[in-house]
Amino acid sequence: MRTPGLSFQLGLLILLGGAGSVVRRQAPDHFDHEKHSRVFPECQSCHAGITEAGRSIYPAPEACANCHDGVVEKKVEWTAPPARPSNFRFTHPEHLRKSGEKLGADSAVTCSQCHTPSGGAWLTVRRTIQPQCFNCHGLKVAHFAAPDTACGICHLTLAEATSLPESRIAKFEKPASHDDPGFLSSRGHGKLTEPGGRSCAVCHAREFCTQCHVNAPEVKAIQALASDPRSLALKAELKAPSSHQESRWLTRHGGRANRRSADCAFCHTQESCIACHRTRPVVVLSLPAAGPGRAVGARIERKKPGYHSPDFADRHAPLASSSPGTCTACHARAECLECHRPNPGAAGSYHPAGFLVRHPAAAFNRQTDCAGCHDQASFCVTCHQQAGLVATGRLQPGYHDANGAFILNHGVAARQNIETCVACHGERDCLTCHSAQSGRHFNPHGPGFDPERLKRRNPQTCAACHGRNIPGG
Image: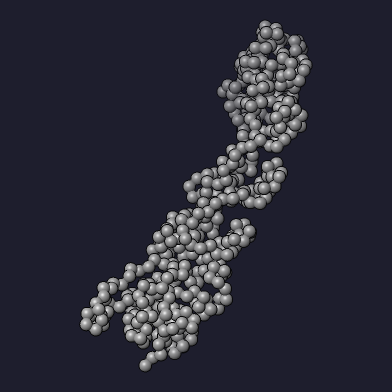
């Protein structure tokens, strides 16, 4: 007669249908095994099917009637419980086979080693006694203190455990390693996310990562995870790293972003920057744009810097003049013009006092971008007409400081800054003198002119004066 408990078959009273138990410890089986301890000397009396994959682990209801026939014992109604959803990798036939191969057929793992508490009486049955499993496998730690890399040894990945409902997934306990202050850094959980690794996949799928990771499509480890919307049952919250709590982070973050924009891409989209930066810095283009498969990212609220005190508007001019790039990070030119409307005749306007007298030189040398505020074709011409600085003919003095000799030197000015000329003049004005077809036939080409080179680059330029009769054409 076999010694009670040496049979491996008892296990399937606890682990259902080859899928096994869930992550958490369960209550004893509803069947009162201890009450029947004198009836069953071995487990396979009822659970003969555990050694064969695909067979039910429970006895047929008719088997109970051998005793509970209404004569020997009262009749009972019993049906096998439904398979319990699980993410356990364990199956009894496979475990029995491997333990036999490793320990020998006579020393194979028995049912009581997994399902009877140490020192417990015969048929004191529990589902899975996790510490006893760990001891057998050489893990001398508590369940959730085990190394993260060990999870995949016993558990299926979430995508493989298709029977688990979201309500069970939401109750997954968090391993101790996840409470480490540095776990959320790339040097923390990032080490566990190598492509092909199964550690994270036991509890997580791709959708879980996209709750926080804006750069999810670019991270190979995230894309290596299977897609499973059930993973959203575990909630993740995007939190700002400790560096963002520094007192001067707001003013210093630009340098960090330029040096290590990839770090910003974990949590920020281009829209994060645009929330504050009215003019997009170059580094913004290195960040991903919001879209499917990415987290929404950090929600940014635009706030005034600390030095923008209530009286800042009265003293902002020196800072704006010395460091305009700082202002343009948040402010557009239109905001400036709400107060600084261009009115050269008014004191306290955008331009300093006396600027009207010397504005021709500033405009010609482009000390400022006049076109940002002024329409040269209307604003400049209108003012010059009102001042009487207009020409009565195409070649007469007027706009050009009433300098009657300007026509003799205008070629130098035109070659230096032709854009200034076209604000008032059209091509027809030039062709009055500089045309090979009509007019005064003045040669517009300066010394060292290479007609062949220009003709190769853009023959249409030549045609403006020469028509189809391009010399040498």
